[in-house]
Amino acid sequence: MSDRISGQALSRRLTPQALLAGSGVLWFAIAAAGQWLFTYYILGAYIPRTASGAYERWNETGLIDGYVQGDWLGNLGFISHVLLAAFVSLAGVLQLLPVIRRRLPAFHRWTGRAYMSVAVFLAVGGIILIWVRGTRMNDWAALGTTIDGLLILITAAFTLRFAIARQIDKHRRWAMRLFLVVNGVWFVRVAYMAWAIASGGAGMSRSLSGPADILIPYAAFLIPLTLLELYQRARDSRSSAFKLVLAGVITAGAGVTALGVFGAWMMMWSPNIAF
Ligand code: HEM
Image 1: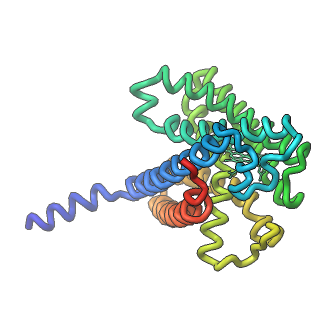
Image 2: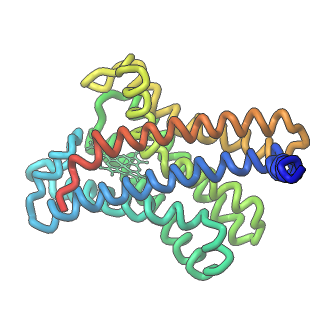
Image 3: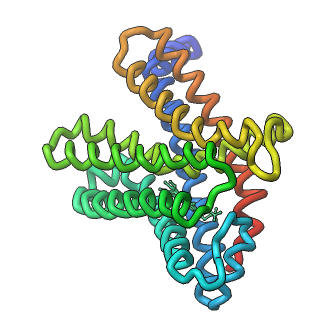
């Protein structure tokens, strides 16, 4: 009897809405861990090599350009891009945590201003690195990352506009889009590793010119942005089937993200940490 009652209580709690919300929390927890591992990699790979003055050792992480002898402006642009990238990877997660927004609103506002300014700096600097410094393996993949950079500028503008206008629901929706496109380059790394592990490297080449290498920079913002829109529509919808399908898709996405973070940590990030 008591088993039946607790079973009923459980099924009342496991509503489609709760399962959908749970899948979102699961994905976010995995992504947050992956973002902070990426932050740890950036600091661990670049601070010791920069602080000791061994700038040519930046290139040990497997860069296209990185340190170039004699190009002090390009080198300065590169290292400021990289070190500020650690800030957005650390702070983006904090900005989206409801507990911080509720309990520390002043912290949320100041970190938010810094986050948006740094994201704009990274996007503009990244586009300059690609098209002025010439840091690209091929034009098609570089165009994908450039579109992601432009989306950072657009979503940052809307996030700021609705924050100033105190239209909090719209601000929140644009802030989530901004978070996803700022993480576009992180998604590239995670998707690259998830695909490499799952497919055994199909469509990939050392010169990064295979079909998978070219598609991943586009998929890295298109898929997360599409899933976010669908997630929000499912949350606002009355259809239980829609909610359950999306809960399944987001849970699968969480699995792919976990696989990619594991691969990136094992093969790209942890081997380069020099602390
Ligand atoms: C906004 C978030 C961004 C973060 C967190 C970020 C992070 C990084 C990191 C960590 C590196 C060093 C490479 C490595 O150690 O893996 C890097 C390099 C670079 N990033 Fe970004 N980046 C961001 C945005 C962008 C954007 C929007 C673009 C282009 C539009 C861009 C273009 C580049 C380029 C060209 C390099 C040099 C790569 C090389 O020499 O191999 N980044 N970025």
